[in-house]
Image 1 (cartoon, one colour):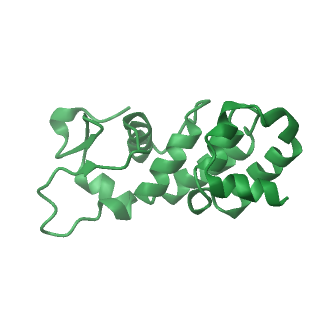
Image 2: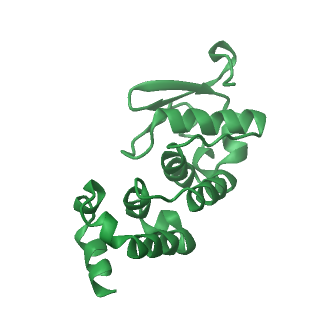
Amino acid sequence: MLPDQKDCDFILEVNGEYIYAHKAVLAANSPFFQFSENDKEKAPTIENEYVDAGALKTIINYLYNGKIEIIEGAGQSLLVTSNFLQIDWVEEQCKQHLKSSIDLGNCFDIWGIGDSVLGEELADRCFRYILRHFAQLIEAEGFLKLSIEKVCKLDMK
């Protein structure tokens, strides 16, 4: 459960939505929130098109209660958000979740996140899954959204 906003001393803005928290909790758990003296008074606006408010709320809830529930379909946004905020434990939990949930419907989306966020093991697992199921996936909408670099990588195999 997120903290009561009247008790909080910090507001985050993500895509026009406000999320309330305590500076000390954020700074103790994420280098992203370790502000300099000049930054402490500003309410940060998180400007990253891949970070969504739902994922940020889930992560902040984890910072307060030590538990995270990765619901189906939320693993990708949680991974990107935890990577952006440098919260390694949540990032690792998301990677483990995604490793076990790669399927025909999400393999291109997961692989498209990018190797720098996925890490070598998860990126390789997605790649191998796509190669094994290529005949089924060639007509999938996700295939059409792949970057030219990703398509070339598939073509080389």
